[in-house]
Length: 417
Length: 115
Image 1 (cartoon, chains in turn cyan, green):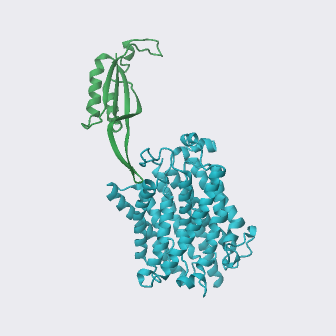
Image 2 (tube, chains in turn blue, yellow):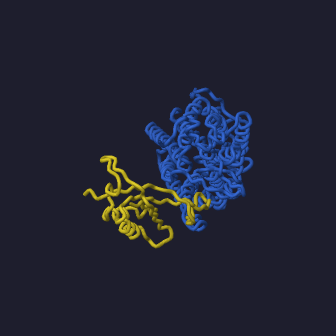
Image 3 (cartoon, one colour):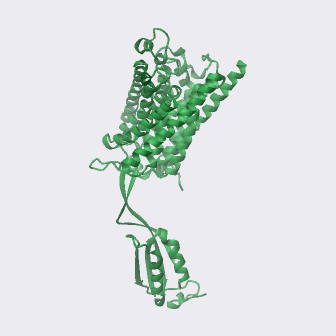
């Protein structure tokens, strides 16, 4: 019986890994749709190179850095493709695959924010660094059993907050890290030519296909059904079958509520419901629920989704109109802002331990501290990485290449012929 | 012999086409054109409001004998008219000569009905 249970758990984990892999085309189509047709081959290629490099490097070293050394210390040992260190019940190769697709998700978020103006060669370097170091190291502190998730008596988190940091499927660990890096990257790059008028007002640069963007978001929505329920890493037995059903429900409710929140806000604010923003709103709800999808009630999930969908509109406007940071697809708002928001709201709305359920500030404090540390790490790494690339080689293509499109100049082939 | 050029709404093209074929026109050319005019549409993309000044229309070019000019213009106006701003314009100009490449003939007769 135990053997069959483990097999069932393994199949569920592998199936979920395949669904999370399917988020890669979701990101690719979403980003391609929100950008202009002269840069489509470039943005598709960036999504491919994320997964190509992420798969190889996470197997080679990232997995060891994340899960090695029993969660002790700053980071685990790379182990260079040797997986024998892992001692869990699930088959290690399947477990590696599951974490590979999560690593690739974190990596691929950045490409959209840096679209239409980044040198492809420099993007390749960024993509390698996040898969090799930035993601695995903060992953070591959390899912690798490290200090932020160490619930042993006398551990730092238990002493300080009486609770450990909880991020079920990666609102903070995956999405906010990608979102913060996206924001830092977009700041170092500067805005696309023509994005801001001389008087500082923001101009619209419509993407070339909302059809592709909408299909991408639907694909991501489906992929999330592996991302969150799969993170239970088990399906057998009453506890697990109840948990994955609950997580699937909360995930879907938050996505729907996120889309609804954005639809209503844009309808009031712009007098017409905006599809381009509502697509982001669905993703905002999904990103927000990811941290606490196992702990919050269905009502809690709807609240998280609505808040994320509403905040998203103001966040995109603030980053664009006030800060003048050009993020063509809204990655920094969707993944950064809503990732942080979802992690914090888990501390408020967790049925067991949440502030709103009368369980005090402890768990909320742990959430706030955890997401602060993780995003501080991402921001510092981003500043060093993008700052160094900009200084040593230049991050951005020449203005002539940007005008004519990256497809022809960077890749020698165009998407539409 | 006259050349008639009409700029019409894209949405009215099918009706105008039928009307022209039902009158005495055997052949005309058309192409999609982009114009810039006073009429603007408010659009919103990702929270940024902007107005489009590019207007898409269809341009139709017809060359016909003098006696068919009035009926052709009537056919266009009766089908392309909505009464709202932006219905378009018709331009009529003199055509100096016409040659048939197949027969080598030229002049008004080339345009005569061959049915």
